[in-house]
Image (cartoon, rainbow, N blue to C red; front, side, top):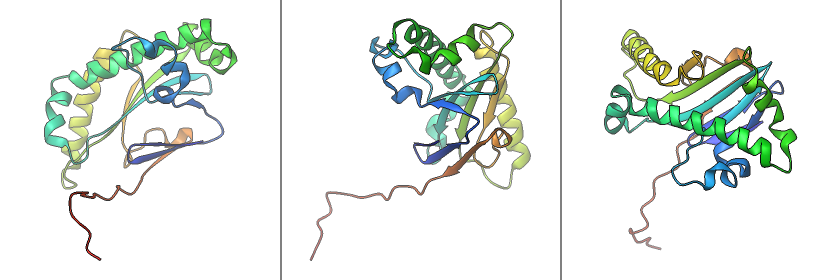
Length: 190
C-alpha cells in the first residue's frame, strides 16, 4: 500500500494493515467532529504491534519550527494526536457499521501485554557535515517525545528518510519531487 504524505511516499508491504487515519471517514465522521480533536497520519498494525505514525516535514522551515522542537511543543502536539487517535479508534469500534476494519487495532490496544509504538517521522534540515550533532539532537528530541507519550508506551521511535528505523519492518519511505513553485500574478507572454 502506498500513501503520499506531503513530499514523502510511504510504501507499506503486505505484512502491514494500515489506515491513513487523519484522512479516513473513521476519524472525520467520528471523533473528528469535535472541535480541537487531532489525529495521527497513519495507524498501522504489523505482527501484533500497533503503530501510531505522525509525519512532520520541516525541511525549508527549520528556523520557524526550532522552538517547537526544542521547547517540547511538537512533542505535546503529537501526544495529543496519539491520545485523540486512541479515543477515536475505540469510539469508532463501538459505533461503526463496519467495526471489523478497526477491530484488530482495538483488540491489541486493549491487550495489556501488546506492543504499541509511536513513530515520529521527522524530516528536517541539518548540515550533512554534522552527523554526530544530528544524532545527539535526535536523541534529545526523542527523549522529549518519550516523556510526553509515556502514558501509553515507552516505545517511541524517531525516524527520517535517510535513517529509516522501520525499513526492516517492510516500510519504505522516499522523497517525492517538490512541487514547482508558481506565481499566478506574473503574466504569461505569448
